Length: 179
Image (cartoon, rainbow, N blue to C red):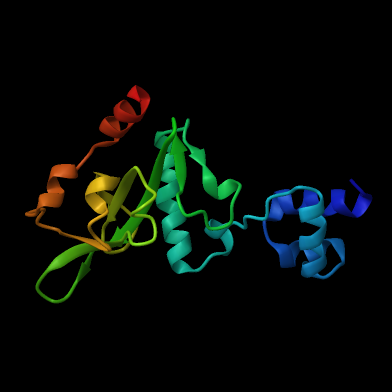
């Protein structure tokens, strides 16, 4: 690698942001991108730091899953906005997060699975309180069952078929350690 490629790669490993790397190294972000690609560096970004509100919220649930299942390979580390978030022992796992919302009479969590429904072996749905701070529930849904849906809506009363897929942290750990 050339000196400029080394500088770009080192800066990007810390910052994960093309524009900030360009400012630090003193070249346009577009040129940073070219140097990173030549150096074989995956340009993935960091949605937890630089993404929009939805991206940062999703990254929170993904980080929680990674904490629980440290053997999970985070596909977002090698691919920008990876379709599937994790690989766990050859199984594709996508993480979804939702805040509890109300339409005035019904409180529910809503998850969009349309982009991943044909690719994920499992969906792990994180159900946060209305503030998005605390996880109230987790659901683990096999891909084949989710494939029939584009969205999954779960009422806070848990009086639906989706309640069958509730799973505890210990249950998640035990399952993924067993496969």
